[in-house]
Length: 262
Image (cartoon, rainbow, N blue to C red):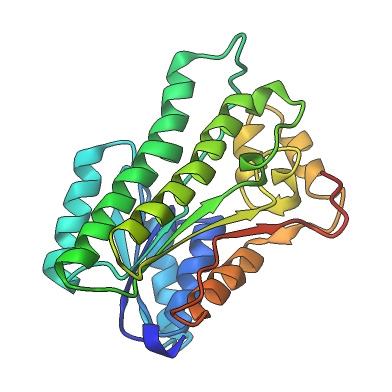
């Protein structure tokens, strides 16, 4: 990770869970991390914790609504003025709403597409343009995906969410191909960490509590069924990917708890 010290990473959805764990880990390794979310109070607390811990990097909170393109474009403009640009972009933000295909609300479907697919694509485009204009040829774009981007489980509440995560899998491979055609050494990686329900319950974050907001007991029970992955496990995978030699392209990492069946 030495080559990343002092360089700039953007982590979306950095207020809780996986995003917070990734942001903290990158700061610990000496990076300047812009952590964005709609609610920055928790990121501010995490930034203060990083200072108290004596980490060599810096966490910079930034308020951004990833469902609003102007917010994202303003964020990248601010990063350019304040920190020159983005060297590493980690598209972590994502959400699931219980909206079945046969009875779900269109508004819920749109919300999932806006955050899980469109925001990821906008941040990817802007990060690449930031790297290109500064002749950064060793940047990295990492999309935090879900095991739901690799298989369809029999749970109507997450079928539309699953479609959005299959899109992330396709977008990451498409990005890798476009980067090669552009003759750049910028890398693209997708990391799927046991998320997405029926398997997201096996990654212990706030995911299940938000998806099952009307049944918190069921959400809590899902995390007790087996030894779950922790957010830090995904953060460790991100560090592993970034630590790979520049000539190594790690395309896809899939992580499950040992006890998980599907």
